[in-house]
Length: 252
Image (cartoon, rainbow, N blue to C red; front, side):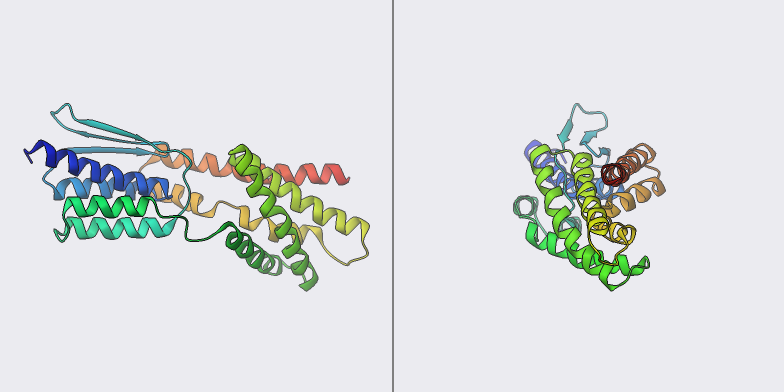
């Protein structure tokens, strides 16, 4: 590829595709593989791609061409990952032009989340009681878990909106549902088990996708990224445990 304009367009497209994937929670191997495949489909054979959770780097051997894209405030949106994958397959198969791919990717980038915060809260409240039952809780524990989740999950989202620190928002959520269950068990005559309620209410807060991606990154030999994500996941889990512990100390 000798045409500078076409080369720049191809790099713009692959950088945009990689940024959307990484922003949407795709694993590192998928991000790098997608960018390399798009580059090769456009005649860029000596492409180098390095993706880390916070940024993407791209360069071409024996040239002064290099790009970097910073990734901020990532969210998990598997719909965007699937859409970008489809664009990548169509482009690399020669069934789509670079201009069309760029326009499609810009449209995908600007898509809102496929679910509202209310839907997220309702989904968490619907899922949590089944975990309570799975862990050995009774029907009353499961019903109480619904109310604990309806209290804690919106509170966690509110704290996240104000502070934008995941560890703090997860700590706040764990503190909220733990205080609710412990105070209800202590000051009411309901035959409930706060441990079972907490076990169910904590599950919507557990970063399952992030941990799965971390393991997949380790399996594909992305050791630095995999270990970084695992430590991030462990810190989130630690913040959940800290919130529950503080609630225990408060209630006594």
